[in-house]
Length: 341
Image (cartoon, rainbow, N blue to C red; front, side, top):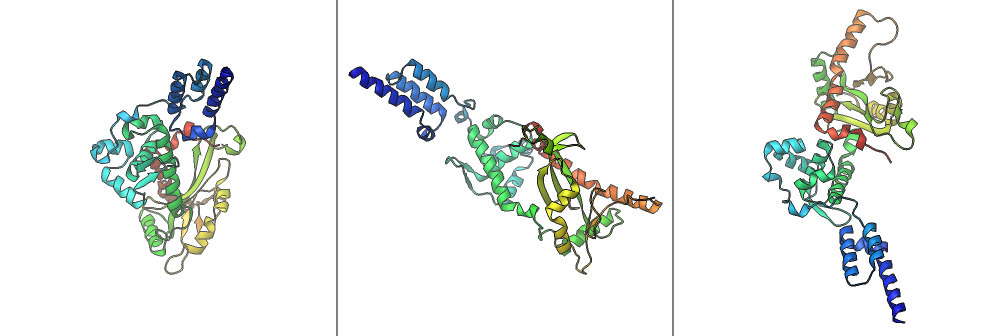
């Protein structure tokens, strides 16, 4: 009778370990493993059960000694070190946190907390160069899951709060006063198109080869699996509007139609005198009152060729801007870690 009761007790103990609710209440898999060892020491589980449970709760991430590192303090960093790791100087990091309205405290779903400036530095460090979360532990003294959750939650927060500034017409930088200023700056650089205030283009971002929908994501022009974005660039270096991501095979003209940008241009792109202002794009875009492009049909005269050459020289700033973004934040160009699904 005693043997039967002991067997029932052992089975119940094993069942408790494999219940998801009990596992969720544990701090980590390492704690569950320690509890298994303790239970084995008190003869609650036998050797076979210990072996099964210990392997079942093997931590997925390496067990880094993050407690042994000093807590993150931006003020203690050298200026050059801060610029190399975060792409911003220390004073600019604080300014960026203020402009982005980063909360003082960031809270994860599993109740971990992190300072707002520290979370922003985690995100900047992650984007500055391809690295693993484990490579950031010595700097921020936090476990890999916390660093991952903080960076992902902060990306979602920034997009939710400020995404409209890119995805919708932004009157703060696209009002008639600014449009006239942009057009004057582009004209001063040698543009023969005096009402042009920006340049539109699509950009292809290569990604890792997906398991599904490979044909949809394959870009035949670049011969890579990719996602695409559409944006127009202003002469002050800002992105005035962005649409995407969309599948890599989508044509630029199709993206333009889906984005609704032409509708916004027809509604808002006018100077104070009511004259239409326009964007300039490559031959892939249709010609409209608010969207101009190079001469490309029939026999081109010398004046047409000179016009195309002049506009092409000014328009090269579009590629420069995208290149600058990739140079500053190289993680965005690391296609092996850019995965869908």
